[in-house]
Image (cartoon, rainbow, N blue to C red; front, side):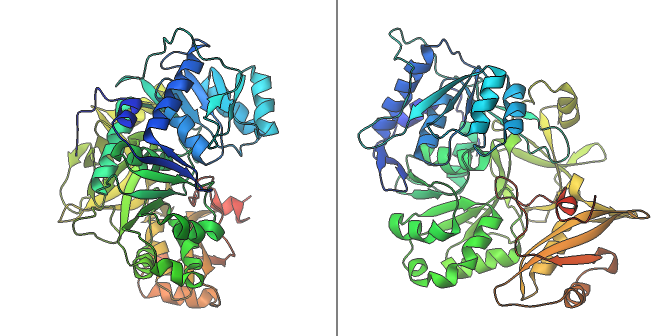
Length: 505
């Protein structure tokens, strides 16, 4: 999987391709040669304010073609940090101050929260003109530099910086070099066998590593095309499938579950679709959901394993070989091992912490020596995930080490409980999580969303679980909800869920 990408830059990759590149939901399309011109124009503009490599620019735009182009352009010259445009003022204040960024790129629809935060921190805020067939993307009020002196990012220059989710501690800044992200995009395109004729449909947020690398950059590195939607919307999803005829999609499991919930209303569109495969990552996909997707769309579901520190992808099932439901496949770029009792191993069925190293893996967090000492050693990165290899070398993940529930000394994987609940015919979604307990330290609770028209009570669900789980793994309480709370990227976050649902103060 590894490839020498030390001399590659984003614009060199773009220059090497021709044909359709990016589309918006209205059908407007951009060619690769147009993208080259836009990247160069934005480079000339930001050079007029003396920006340099490794200086940080915050990018705050909604999903869409403008966001995709702006990311590619800025990442080619400086260090770009995409931020969720829906943050509150306090959230913007935290992230912008933590980044110590030089300037902010946004558009005419910037929120009051962003404008107020920029004003308080005295950060220069520039707006882009929205791209249309008659108007190329450019930054308002910034002239084209007459002496174009801004260098393109080279292999070890940082072109992207993202924060970790921060569910258990202060978010950490993940610095990713040009080589990191291009290596990962190459690994993804290789696993998926992407070709120039492929057309992706991006429904992932482009302030998240999954959307940026797995959807956008893997398409660009291949010379393929990508439809940049305005974000995930289950109501417009099937209309976009019909209109654009994409050959592949990458998303998180909760998005696919929402897509499945509307499948019966869109049978004709599904039958006429040109999808080669569906890719899932960023959270564990229940086996029942994989089976339902493959039966519905009549194409394989490729489950992958990713995280920000690895520029997204670490392992994946492969399109052209055996896939195992419930497994995240085999190494798909970096080296992977199990770390147990201070030793590295790849022996089958040895459970321990998953560790990785490779050209797509960050060399460390920014300004956080404590976290670097805890998470990096001898070139390896400790993922914080518990897992094992099977006899065929497929990787199975038990869950985040911090999410493993310790019930009076008994260790329980929440994913195991989720899988068991999902096997009940009435259950559409399930999430198991920890609840504080005075005597046991932690106890188990679960929340479920039922399939449309289905009914089942808590007693029946517990009886169902007792057929496959030991008694200590059965949740004390099972809540039935209309919707399970999700984070900004569509992922379900177990940590803190008890408090969100009112089970803890």
